[in-house]
Image (tube, rainbow, N blue to C red; front, side, top):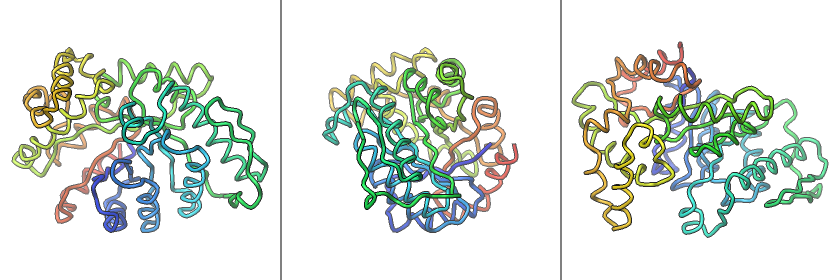
Length: 339
């Protein structure tokens, strides 16, 4: 399996280069950069500039808050900077964030995403060929690119792949139709959801366009550490994080598949009452153990492989908070990479 490192979205930008160097030393194949606190392209540039072999992927940059041309230019620059080590991962986010936090439109998200990805690929073609773009999309008609604004072609450098982060059935099916790969969300990385919902939808999309099923990288929530005490110390933070995520209606398909939909109802009710501190009380320990990958470092590679090796080609892990623990964690990355 390919092994990608996750990154704390609140990491100061001044620490990103050092973190990327550390991830590369640990043997990770790549680094996933989320869009939550920092601009993901700025963080990706810092990571790429500090490394020589690490692949860096936005996971995910928000598509609907930028024009396709602006996104394409940023991705092209990063591909050039890194000599082909950058992948563009895009996601839609949920309506409340796009409209309320960014002030942008969210109507018809699957059609809008299809338009966005199509426009970006047309921009890439124009950058390489020097010919003006001719994309007559319903949301993003792009037909103008004067020579003074056209970047240099990449030539032999690999252009950015376009991956998609998706949760809902229709968006996953679209990823099967057009994306170079699918990145799962922590709430839809459970093997039951992958096997019974996501992969069939991805295969349906690929079949509709007569193409190979794109690769999948799973992003499960993982509770791990050097020993059982470290795992238990991590449990409260994992409980808070999972309760927050599953309070979003769009993220509840796994709960429904596992017969836990009533928990999603309760979490949503608490958010509507503005009782954010009470969310964690809804998920008890047995529920957390059903939803979260739990194993100490010596067993983690085997547990991850057992759950995901037949369902995905890659997995996202986060290295220990303390770099002094890297020697104990490095065998996990090596073991997964050899499978």
